Length: 131
Image 1 (cartoon, rainbow, N blue to C red):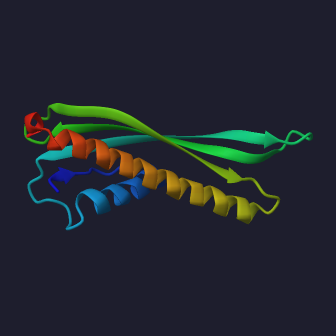
Image 2 (tube, rainbow, N blue to C red):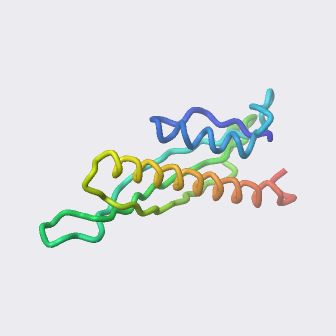
């Protein structure tokens, strides 16, 4: 609850920041945070299930988050890491259906990333030497 999460660039970053804030600071941002969590995201797609006419029928959405936990007073890096989530979705003939499936895969990936970052921070901060 003592972690400040600065804005993360682009819409994908905004959604991840909301997920992280809901998990790490559910009562709102701390007034005097002890830590700052910086996150950078990258997204890529990988086509799978290629038909004879070279069109894909399935794709993987790969989102990677690199994060740093800093001591807010000293600015010292306490923990670094990266997490990755791969989610598949169908590529359909209807464009709206494909966009909807891709959007759902993106939401699942962001939830996975937030859970993994929360777990790593919890493990790190629960160690007696981290406090």
